[in-house]
Length: 253
Image (cartoon, rainbow, N blue to C red):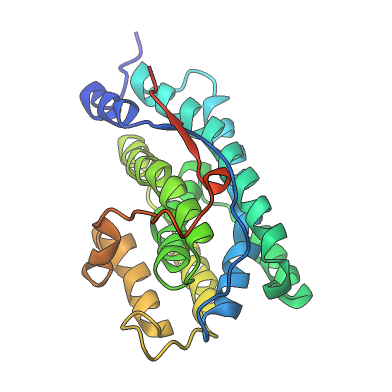
């Protein structure tokens, strides 16, 4: 009899946090001066969303995966949710296509290839990418874009990714997996490229080093004190977005 790994209560808690939302994208709005190129690069890196789905599914396809059923359900939900993320980010990329240069999109594909070919375990790649790359990218869209449309998208994806990051790191721990130094370097190279052009002097988060430090802290400590603002709820005022640009939420039950 195979001993199943993982704490069922932890994984059930993640399942209970799930919120169903329908992807929608509002209108294009002006971006914060000095953040435009970084916003474009963030949207270019949307190509990594479905790679996470592929990695999660590859774990699910592992014969006799020694995880408790609740952990497997978490993986199944995460794989489904990555489709929503890809869809809404593609819509955003269409709206803001003029801030995504062809060179930056090409570089994003190069990073995608590097993540795809990296030999670390798929769940490690998902855990590192979600906890310390996506959780830099998404707060940038929320806090520095100056766009209600991108703020809505960031809020909804972040609600999912907070669960994904927690559960994937826990699954990696349950399976006794640790990431390599080369994966850590790829993570840092990805974030460094993302934030390199960022220059918003009027905002305390408007500089590259803040986000590089945050990414390091998120990977090593699972927290980044400099991003405390992201824990506050964000609301869209009635005049910022038409109803057609707001997502529809439903109970997970």
